[in-house]
Amino acid sequence: MRNCTECGAAMREGYVIDDGAEYYCGDVCLHENYLAHEWDEMYADGEGNSYWTTWEEETDLERAEVRLLNALRRIRESREDVREFTEAVVELTGAVRQHERARQADAALRGMLP
Image (tube, rainbow, N blue to C red; front, side):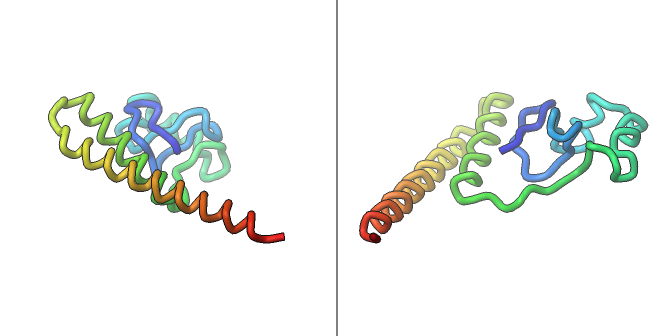
């Protein structure tokens, strides 16, 4: 999982700087650190090692983790939305349990095979 270097938001898409040295979730965060002409130079018409991308779809567990981290970040900023955080924790807990059951079933299957 990637987090914005500027604001800490979990990211599914965004700017990659210098092949992953930094990540920015959008224009606002990018331009807090780089001027437009600096970005243009780094991007170099697609030939540079800085670019915008969308990462592949995450698993349920990764999606729940992203939701939890984003909710936690918003709570830290506003200290208001405890319900959203609680729902995210419940979702993450369910995803972890489902992941563990699948892992155990897989291990059991492997034990049954020669």
